[in-house]
Length: 287
Ligand code: NDP
Image (tube, rainbow, N blue to C red; front, side, top):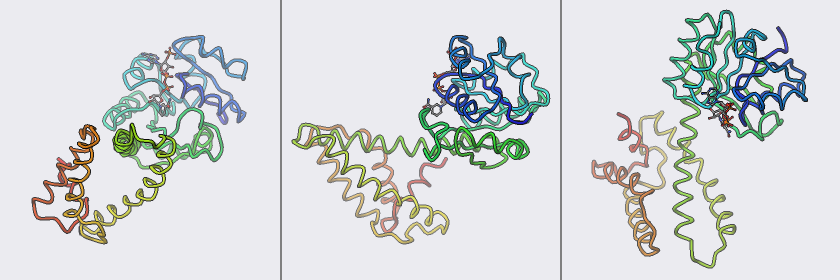
């Protein structure tokens, strides 16, 4: 069964993944709900399955890349998965991934959940930085390690099938916070003589310089000492937040993206932790 894979779902991501295996000489069987999208890959050597069951039967390794977890359940509802190695790279929550792993196990399949850290143009491109978090069956990962490394780097993070999704969503959540900061910063600068492109360069430089802040937080979490190595203490930062808020006011910009974090920093300060950094905010968030 070497160099054989079936890909279910040929949206932007699924098609890029299937193409990377075709380009590496794999025998690729594809299935997509809208048949036209599958036929586009025939010229590149793909075998188009007329039905999902046919695609699943064609290879031991079955990779699923659909819109969401519900579509995975729908597509595979009546398909025999006995003895299959199912790799689901559809974005899902950790809970959905764990349930999907149990569901697959009950059908006689080994299961690996995936979280893709890339956009389609990065797939199959060496050194693009693209990688996929995988978690679930260690035996499946070991058996298909080479194949899984073709579309993007393959990072196995543990046996808990939900752990790949959790890594994925945690990184995306960090990025969402960055989007908030970037949006607020551009809003402040709007209407000035500074071109957005010029300001973008400054912003990228500053955010890059500040990113290792995460290592400082990690050291504080690991030691349990939230004042460890602090050079910018919470009392000073909360004072600084006042300047950020007044500037927003002066510029006629809503501070709604910043205020939730600032409120948490104030709560931590009010509880007597002015000498710490910001790690205490994590305690306030954890339910
Ligand atoms: P697309 O919207 O391009 O494709 C969605 C795919 O899901 C199509 O193949 C579509 O079939 C299929 N589909 C949706 N609903 C159903 C259903 N009910 N039954 C059968 N098939 C269904 O999405 P992407 O390819 O971009 O994304 C796929 C997965 O990859 C998602 O989970 C996404 O989060 C993840 N991902 C995507 C990234 C990206 O940048 N694109 C980045 C990282 C992860 P049809 O063609 O018939 O509509």
